[in-house]
Image (cartoon, one colour):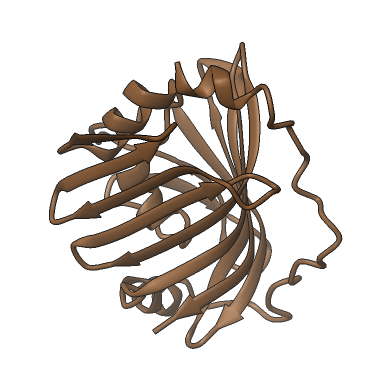
Length: 202
């Protein structure tokens, strides 16, 4: 399997890094205004790192993720700049390049799991990475009125993921997360950590 070959030259890293993450707002944020602003963030790019761990494997990689309506590009590279996973989703036509092979499907999460063994809720993350809860998601707020934790409601593909947020920075008209962790409630040792070094929002 691809992921097991990758582990031979990847090592698992904490995402602390040397870059200082933003501290978030100094004053209370209006949640309705924040959520309205996040709904308008539909053309964005993030650069940073992603770490994935389950009961058997641990991987850390550089992350580049671009999202536009009906067009998603998700790429993971190792510390040498070699592309490990290159995924594109154009109007439901999903292509994944990994291990010098090309795979196709109509479901990005299913394709990643089939090829790499990793469970990544790609569709839900398009909103969660922005700190935007779904209509049935439950959440708690930090002392500034931004999302601190998120528990998915009734949605396909959400599984048992729970999301926690620790850092926010101001980008254009909204506060966007710079660090989030997804943990499986049924598998506490399984998690995904995303550290964002840069947001670009158009």
